[in-house]
Image 1 (cartoon, one colour):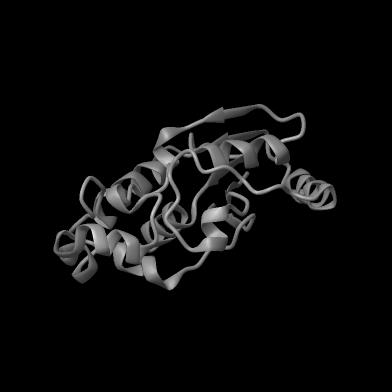
Image 2 (tube, rainbow, N blue to C red; image 1 turned 90 degrees about the vertical axis):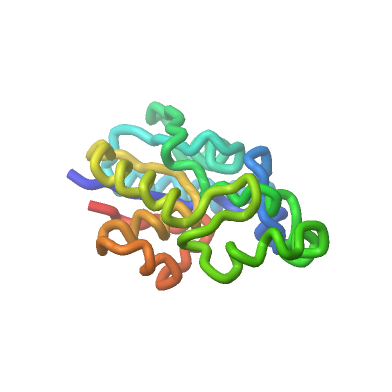
Length: 173
């Protein structure tokens, strides 16, 4: 009995280096990659797929689930980056400058305007670890998955120790 997380597939935001919005779609995925991913998921012997409600995660879940049931869970959404979403860092800095400084200096304690701090999102990761169902694959995001891994170690400051690639599957339990 295990719990797995998978990062969504590649988006234009990943390629162009800007912060994605919740409605950022996946880039097209070649059929041979889809088949390989479905095989990987089948080999996990999971019973369900649960997706973040963000479009890129929903689309990823749809292509990898095969005949498994898919549901959405808002708890596993990406860290809310507020005014940065839809912009590159430099564009956001040009628009918001000094308002971003506290977050730049300490992203654990401060959030970008209209966003959430890493500590706030970490609380969601702790709740996820307590409520995640076994034999399930959760399709989520790099930032949130890094927070889950940090929560397993018991400290949000492990966040920067991880990098999760697109379509990467990580065993949580």
